[in-house]
Length: 219
Image (cartoon, rainbow, N blue to C red; front, side, top):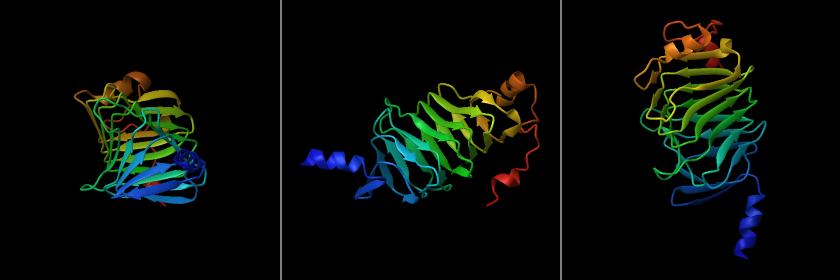
């Protein structure tokens, strides 16, 4: 009977069970879902097209399965604050989880005051619109993978430390749609890396298209 219940739960979108401030999430996200406190992720969670995932300050999404990832086709708002960041991490120092992958999402996805630890690839942006602000990336195999000519990405006031690869990896992108501003990249100059790849860099801001930053914060 217990096995039957577990199987049934896997086919119910967005099933949440809570116990002592710890939540286990199973299934896809439809509509609008709010997560808070500690959330255990035991398999891949998908934010479906048209759905929204909102994560409250002080929350921790803990990926117990190394193959688990968070895939976003809809929208994600991970809004921590300075005293209560949002964590995306594996539970143990010697384990990794797959990461967050945003695919084709044209709405404004925001990660603010978030901490990404022990991921294979912390964030993959694939033809999506993403704002990363005041975030910290540590102990990841890779920090950012940026793909697709429709990607629009602003990374601001964030820190990349003690990762196997601190630098983002670019694949088939339009460099005119990227902004990197006031970030700290280990002990090396990320601006030099950008300059070598595209020969276009403006001090610590990479924005050859002169995108208006206010566009990223408007409703």
